[in-house]
Length: 271
Length: 315
Image 1 (cartoon, helix red, strand yellow):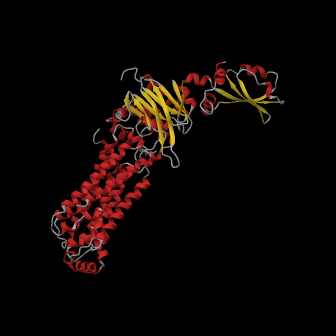
Image 2: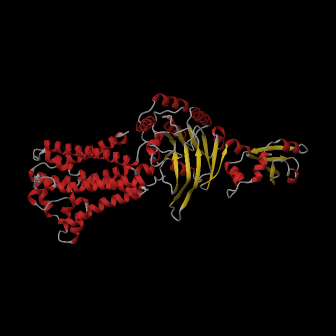
Image 3: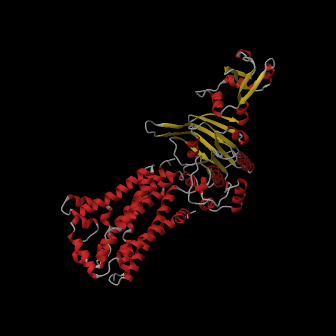
């Protein structure tokens, strides 16, 4: 029956989503309430300015000192730059949860002996993890929002926080889809874990180095990194999201997802 | 599907795995038909290709050559429709460990589009299975019972069971046999892979014997067991020369061993017992041959049927 695989995964994993959501909400809330006043914000901005460019880039810093000393700049530096890195762990685990984990545990034989096509398993589970990622992002937003309500200094519009939080979704979906693809290509979970982790870490390092070395060829190569297309600065500076970048990430995620379904449909299930 | 269409049909089915060093031919040109309403035993030692066959039938793996059909339909093209009509129990049953038995049954039932809870209750009562426990806390026997409930709960037209009763105690083995015979009585078909001869003898109509990925024979169970033999060990008060018993009807392979004689006996005991009357027998031990020994007796090391044994069996 259509939707049953989707619902089964939600039933089995909603507690994990709550755990991750609560954790992210707590981190978001803490990032705001630990900063008591404007002076502290200014000191933080001064400190960031004194860092070498590569460190600033590594932690999502902006080259605009005025922006760094605003609540939005602070949140960009302390929370939004790290958000996809925190959730990359969940995203990779989710991607592996589409087929690799159950194949590794020998459960997949039982699942695929039921009347469900393989492609639907990939599609419905991907959608279920998308919903759970959205749930975690909602928790994160709520943590930020409560923090801003408790700290008058952070007079950041809720809609801006919501859009900035959800702008991480396409990047996270690309990670889920990549891990899912690795899980369907390799029959061994360990190989899929290594490949997916290398993808995330490699893309992040490439993006960081590329941004820091603006004059070098590394900057051009870093266009290949999925992190390059995650940009909350424009949103938090009052502008619109970079729709083109978000769209590109979504296309990459969908292509990887389709690839996962294609490979999974065609290959032997390992014991 | 009309009544003449085999429930299971394999045509020249082969599977070669890419091994680390060289390709491994797990199944080699299997051609087989299982008719509706049969309990069909699929016998063979470990590594013979039984599980590979089952996984091919379920479209979990794809054949290197040949074709498999269930109910006359190609297993790959119609896998979803076919799986609706199949109950499956894998040889090595792995389930979500954090779910309870009941949750596991419900999950499988939902994917199948619903389940008859009263029938599940009847099954669990007969198998004496507590569905309230988490899967991780089940013993191997209880996990097997849970797998049987999942396979049987939708009363499928075809049951594919891989080493179904391994881990079951003798009482539950009996219940399992009854369940299979009841399924057959309702017109359903059972494909049962096993290496336990007694299980096969008790419930199967026909058996296929597989060895090294090749089908050696398909026999009626009665024919297979008729050729059955036993190892007989005799202890005497005084030494008896092996030649004294050689040549008796059904007796072969007589050898002296630790002061006793060991021989292979096919057929009735009477000629042997009469021949023993001049001697003082201290002890008699009768050992049922392993399935492997029966295979070897039937088909030899290279798969050639031994006519001598057939003659011996018939005598």
